[in-house]
Amino acid sequence: MIKLLNGDVTQHLKEMQDETIDCVITSPPYWALRDYGVEGQLGLEPTFQEYITKLCDIFDEVKRVLKKTGTCFVNLGDTYSGAGSGQKDTGKAIYEGNDFRKEPTKTNLSDKSLIQIPSRFAIEMSNRGWILRNEIIWYKRNCMPSSVKDRFTVDFEKVFFFVKNKKYFFEQQFEPHKEVSIKSRSSKLNQTTHEGSNMSAVNVQLGNKPRGNRFIPEQGRNKRCVWNITTKGFPGAHFAVFPEALVRPMIKSGCPKYVCSKCGKAREKIYEKIYKGSTKSGYNDGHGQGKHLDIPNETIRGKEIGYTDCGCNSPFESGVVLDPFMGSGTTGVVAKKLGMNFIGIDIKKEYVEMAKRRISKVPMRLDKYTKKSSDNVKVK
Image (cartoon, rainbow, N blue to C red):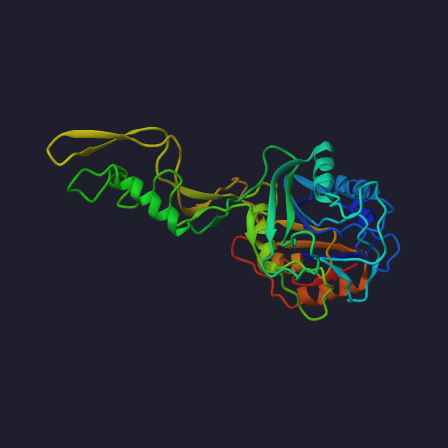
């Protein structure tokens, strides 16, 4: 199911049922940066306080439609006081550093001061009951060159990871271990090896694989919060475009691949458990003397071996991703590539049509566990 909605985001959200969305991924229009030429658009409020209030009011509705186990990722950029605003939607930007400006903004802050809109937004979201789990740094190593000479070039944006309950769906993501970490950990393990032996007690117990404290080279380490991802555009896009590589880990971690069509419970991956708890690992010191080594008090996760099952014996559906500020539709493109359902909303008709063209080119990915879904992109 792919559904694209054109019009006011608040109105479309109010028409949606409670707790029907698994994952929200979006980048709202930044304050005082651009005029999309559409009545009722977000981002042209007279003050940043009004902007944050209006934005968080929208996310109150997002919270209502999000499932209790749902996740929410929000990318939001900052603005400098007095730097200018109101850039028309012509595709031609006036740059000051990484920001495009026109008319001076009016705030109670000193000119040239960073307003800290992302931080103010995150605090207000927390005040309204959202749980902030992570502040992710999107590092843009190919950021726009900066002409300013009295500050450093900004080469990152923030992505906030929110949930509405303490227990929520999250599929752990991994990244490769750094070479120095592998060498360091292997060295520490080998320190426990008896002279003349090439195998530590931990290696003996775990089958010659150095799976010590959180160290499983073939799986990788838990993904960090600084994501090194280059910006990428495409012909015909507006100039604020999500790169697919930024969206992919959000969907893979926050949106379940399989959801029971009867009870609504998501299937979760099951991993091999190497060991659990603090144990005594016995080994021979090479001279007939038995010795022991304390294993760290934690479970080491091995390879993926399957999925949980709710026992309903009903078909499974793909999770639903929502982007309330869809723009050119990159979130929808990635969602469809990963086999997820998608709902996108945008106030500008041209962007909805652009998103439709992009998403329609992507074949729907389904597997034997998921019941069939329409490959058509519906626009309302």
